[in-house]
Figure 1 (cartoon, rainbow, N blue to C red):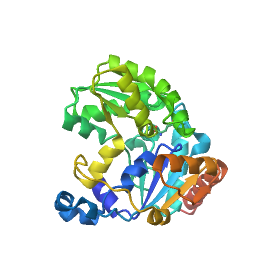
Figure 2: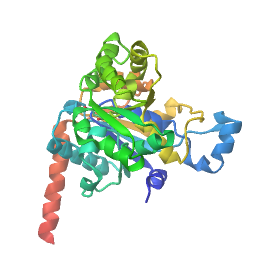
Figure 3: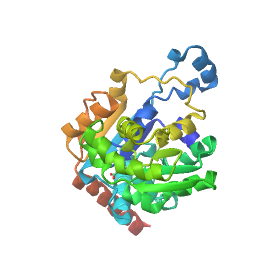
Figure 4: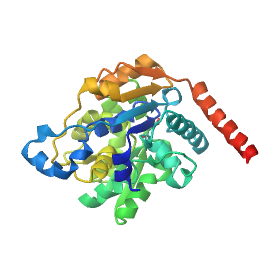
Length: 320
Ligand code: DGL
């Protein structure tokens, strides 16, 4: 089944990240119109965009805040964490997982996901389409240390636009800024500046936010680019690329409306391994919505789920 059909069929979708970053993906998904409106979507959008309804899927968002950041961690650690989280999501009746953490997607690449019991979608693959569509020639990627090392974005882009030159840059100072809710500060502009300078020096025509935390720094990034260069650089959010793929059409001229909050509070479940109050502030700042129900699950409890799974597996092996 292709990605669009898997998404259309899914009733409850699990998203995970090391912390607040994946909310940038959830934010895009929540604004997608109801896929049942697809038949006459174009016509409706042209004539009366306000009549588009947001879709009614349920979401479970898992933030592994206690172990954030993931960007400096080893492949073994990330594989273990992803295994535990996907296992927990499966136990909580999710029928599709969106890896809203590019570090996890880059390190646990598709060939290594075969052991998971749920279908998994990532944000990496769809960036190639947007690069191809816009015929970008020189692309900068801002990512975590771990993602940049894998060259996952270069590989995804090469499949669609082999002649494009890609410069992947590790930006380790940015995730802590987002996690500490300093996205719109002078400190953020200053932290972004050396990374932006390096990419501008490569004369890039577009920059991809290769870590899901970074779209929340967009306002500061724009300020930074304006201070550094008179030339316009396009910023690409891979969550937008994925949304276009899931919808099967471009979002460029589409008017999107944030869904109704009261309804969302019933459809979204938030779980963190970190501090509930800090996470609540992060949701409020970055999604602009005061979600009330946030659950805490300790890393220990998460790991117990995995231990039980391997016990059950060995038990069934013995029976066989
Ligand atoms: N937001 C994640 C990503 O897209 C992880 C960032 C981190 O924890 O270092 O890579």
